[in-house]
Length: 373
Image (cartoon, rainbow, N blue to C red; front, side):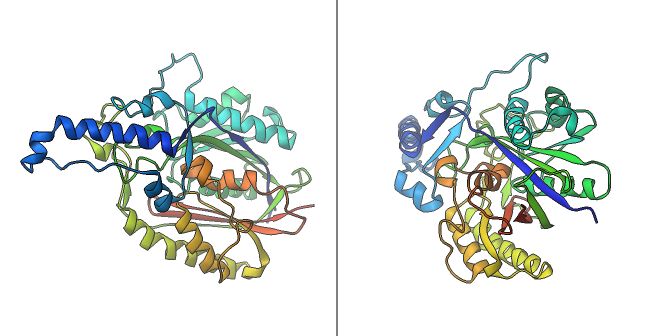
């Protein structure tokens, strides 16, 4: 079987960031306004009063301290509480493609690749800007890549599903070099007026260049094995689509934005993912002591702590299970790739690690890698 490697990764970080303190001030101003405007209905028991948020609540629930966003002003305006990203004419590159191209260019530069060296592009992300033309095809065009491209969506697991898809194309001889791009404008589908989730997401773009191992540059990562799993659940859902178009803010239609049953997700996903990782390790004859690092999906610090503990048999150190959640928040499919991108340079030849993502679906993906010479 053809050996496959991750040659390089790329990262695009938006210029604007929102701290928990800033977010709480805006959210609580909205709550105060809502409760005042609905005081009579609240007193009559017809409308439920909204509760304020706090930085303590956010950090205890998630481990998040800040998030990068494409539009800070709209989110922090209590009258709007939604990003305002202007539409662009069709002859300009779309916002989502622009994020993907920026991340892709860094990955390509790090691997010493140009557009003509790449055979395919996969745009693997939770939140597509449009139905068609495919975002991947627009990114392909902007980078001057020949071949083929398509979009795929497996929610927060999209990046790991994209890595396996790219690896399978290479193993089958359909490509030698595949670019997997994960532009995530998560702020556009978050209900910033919901206390239980208003702090969760941020915006970012990542890219992964997957290639035949025999053409990968020095310092690449051999893919030891990949594994995917899905199991249907309604506990994380977003009902927005072309059949039920809503206003961008989703006002009055909270199910057209991100919704989740957080406690159920925690209870069901942690054991599912831990068991999947351990099962895949057994297939690859890997022991916990063989893993130097776990680059886990950046959704919730408490979930990652429990998953890594189940896998390693003890609590992981910050070096063994690095986090970017505090700075970036949940960036859906891009989270584990950011962690890998920022926390892999100290690894030595032969060191092994795990890129793992999990999320709505439920979906989960594991990619075991080893640092090549």
